[in-house]
Image 1 (cartoon, rainbow, N blue to C red):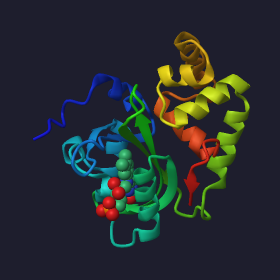
Image 2 (spheres, helix red, strand yellow):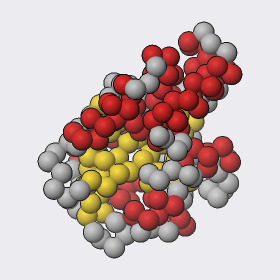
Image 3 (spheres, helix red, strand yellow):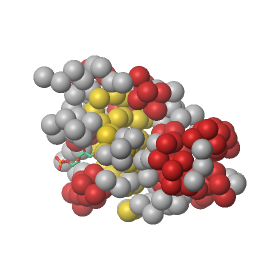
Length: 210
Ligand SMILES: Cc1cc2nc3c(=O)[nH]c(=O)nc-3n(C[C@H](O)[C@H](O)[C@H](O)COP(=O)(O)O)c2cc1C
């Protein structure tokens, strides 16, 4: 039996301080269970941590969840690329909500798939289809980055670690870290997970969208 309570500490840093509901899953375990979630996820969904960790995230789906959108998430997971879909989900008390969910792969130092990041944003009930306003806001934030910061962000959104980004861009790891810190600051992102979400919302990492 896997010990789901022992999420590596670096992982908590990825999502713990985020104001955005977030989970991390481990695709190396049977059925890709969640191994960590943050307080914002508990607040959004109403599920306590012990009913989240160890389970696949499909428990948020329900009777009116769109099968086509679930399939888009499955496809992104299968193909190890970020997806952003606005899907009908359910809170623990049965209340349905429109969830703008991002699912993005995170790779290890060897370039092997290690985790999936999931982040969930509740959209207003009267949102007129795909939320243009989040896209516009994310675009504005991304456009305020320097070209180098933007490049680093694009690689972060592909789930790459500093070491891999440094190699790809021909920079030192130290320089990548500096750009990463500066771009988080400029985006107003509390965590790497939030920065990845902004990148995908701005559509700069060419994910599938619905
Ligand atoms: C990290 C991660 C987060 C996910 N978050 C959600 C979510 O918030 N809502 C949702 O409907 N599906 C989410 N999914 C997808 C579900 O885990 C599941 O694949 C989907 O509901 C389809 O169910 P099925 O695999 O039983 O067909 C997430 C998947 C991963 C890997």
